[in-house]
Length: 269
Image 1 (tube, rainbow, N blue to C red):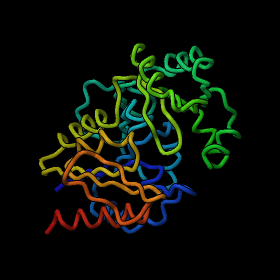
Image 2 (image 1 turned 90 degrees about the vertical axis):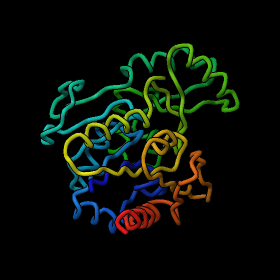
Image 3 (image 1 turned 60 degrees about the horizontal axis):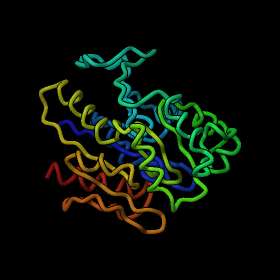
Image 4 (image 1 turned 120 degrees about the horizontal axis):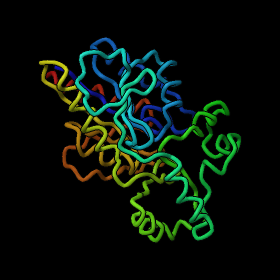
């Protein structure tokens, strides 16, 4: 059996306060030992994911900026991806719009809604806002498709969503920020495509797991076979709209690891 593990990062595999994945080591070691696919599905940029994968010793496909694009390392052979374009050392399937198009909406609506996006901030301000180290904040500024932002009047979010929709854009909520992106992209759509590509690479039966904690993970958790919700640090648990959801026993990397191991144990029993 091939197990595909699709996971959010911040607040899920990575602890909310310090971005550590130490608590996830038991499950990460099992994934590596069994040869299962670990696919990051995140609001982070390609630069951030590449850095994290190097730290973790991982070389696999990943989805960036809330489903804007899926990247497959060229080292992964035997994959049939006719719609992919070569992008450096990757084959990329793109669902989102170029960053300049998304950013233009923020610039035009800045006064109306009191918007402040990553494109308006220096790396030091992003680091203070997100608790990222400065070098990671620099990587977070290297946007290709989406714009994280703050707004002065959050109570007007629905009005802004309507204005964004009129431009073919959408807004989703992450762990710390709002994210402006193409209405045609989502984590769910990207995960469905990655699953289709990886499942077609061999004869083994495939089971997909998804792990996430925030509203921008909801569509991902709706399309996998086994959804796992990670509680927020304050104890809140996202409603995915499925009866078969597994709730991790605690937030962050420790809950991520415990819940994943429990679910795969049930698959093999």
